[in-house]
Length: 79
Image (cartoon, rainbow, N blue to C red; front, side, top):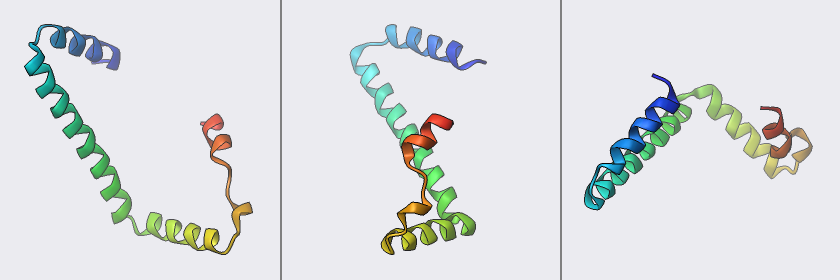
């Protein structure tokens, strides 16, 4: 099912809930979002390659080698 269809169904379901149930639904969605973020963090932490790259970048920053990095604004525009 497409994302837009799912979101439309979710909005329809929310409209039929009481305020108390909407609060419960929001809490559950927050839980799911946090869980998803935690899973992504654990994936990064378990990758030896990614952790090595992060450590290398941190060392370069501490040494003041900022010219080795691409400004975030440029990265965002190219994605």
